[in-house]
Length: 192
Length: 362
Image 1 (tube, rainbow over the protein chains, first blue to last red):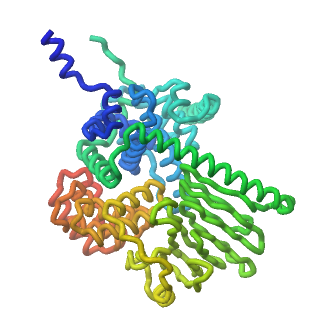
Image 2: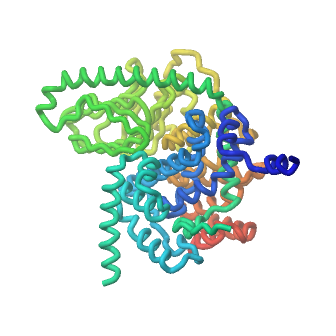
Image 3: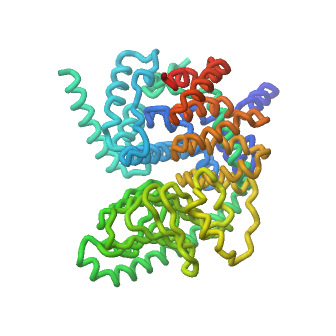
C-alpha cells in the first residue's frame, strides 16, 4: 500500500493534468509543460528550419500561441499532437516569411549547414540520408520542403503530416511525390 | 528491456541548451506578466463565442461591401487589369501585391487592405489593419493615396511604410504611423487638418504622445512646424502603463509590425527605466533595431541600456554579443574591437564567443 502510494506520488503529472492546471491559471503547471516540451519544440523547429537563425523566435512564438489558446484544446491528453501542429505551422510561417524577405532583399538567406547539423554519432546510412535531404531542402518550395522533412526525417505517416500541417492528404501526397522526384534526381546526379 | 530504435531525427544535433531554455522562459514569463492572468475556461469560451459572433458579423459586412463593389465594378472588370473592390486579407503570412500601375506592395501578416481604385490615373487604398510597405512607381499624372484611420497619405513616387493599429477597440483606436524610406509623402491626419510633408527617413505617428517617441527616427525639421499647430480635439487619454506598453509591443511583434513594436518598447524604456521589464524591453528593442530595422546606432543604445542597468538581466551576455555585432555592422571599428575584446574576456565559454571573435576584422 505504502509502496503504491509512494509510486503514485513520485510519478510525474500527466499532460492532461498540466493542461487543466495551466487553464486554471496555475503558473507551475504552465512552467512544467514548457520544460517538458521545450526540447521537443526546439528539436522539431530546428529540423524544419535547418538552421539556428530564427530558432528561439519559433520556440517562443509556439509556446505563446499554445498558452494563449490552451483553453481551446478539447482533449487535454492530446497536448503533444496539438502542440506539434503549432510548432510546425509556426516554423512554416517563419520559413515562408524569410523566403519572402530574401526575395525582397530585406534579409539574408539562412542556408542549411549540413556539417554542423548531423550528429557525430550518426551511422553512415543516416548521414547519407540527412545529407541528401538537407542538401535539397533549400531548393524546394516551402510545402515540399516541410512534407519531405516530416516524412524522411521525422518519419511521420502521411495522415500525421496532414494533421500536423493542416494541409489535405492529397496535397501532402502531391508535395511528397514532387519532393521525392527531385530527391531521386539529385541522388542520381550525385552518383554520376 | 526493450530497445527502441532511434529515429533519423534523433541524429540531428540541435543547438539548444539550458541557457536558451531559461532565456525563452524568461521572455514567456515577461509576456505573461504583461497580460492579464490566463482566463478560466468558461470565460474563454464566452469570449470565444463573442469573438466568433463578431467574426461572422465582420464576414457578413465584408461580403456585403465587396458584393456592392463587385456590382459597381462590373464595368471596371471588363477593362482589365483592374483590382478595384478587392479586399486583401493576409491572415498569418506576408503577401506581396503588384498593382496595375507598376507599384508593388508588401503586406505584413494579419493585415487587411482594401483596393478602392487602381488604374492608370488613380490608386486609392484603404489599410484597415496591419502594415503595408509601398514601393510606388513614379508617375506624375497619377495620384496614389493610402487611407488609414481617418487620415490619408498621398504620394507621387516613393517608398514608405504605413502601420494601422491592431486593436480597434482599445484606446489606441485609429492610431497609425508612417515611415518614409525614399522621396517624400504628404500626410493628413483628418480631412479638417492641413497636410504635413514628410521627407525620407521621417517617422510620423497619428498619436500626439508618440511624436517625440523616437528622436533618432523622427527628424524634427520635417515634422514639427505643422504638428505644433494641430489642436487637440479631445482630452489626451491616460498614458499607458509599462505593462500595457509591453503587451502592445508583444502583439505588434507577433504580427511582425516591428516599427510599432520598437516604438512601444522605446517608450517603455524611456518612461519606466526602473521597471523590472525594462532590461528585457531594451534587449528586444535592440534586436528589432539590429536585425529588422537595421538601425545600428539605435540598437547599440538599447543594448547599452541592458548592460548598464543595475539589475543584471538573463540577457546580459546576449546583449553584450549583440552590441559587438551592431558596432560591426555600423563599421565602427574602435568600439567594435573594444567591446569584442571585453566580451571574449568576460565570456570565453559563451556559445556566441566564436562568432564574436570573428567580428570587426581589420
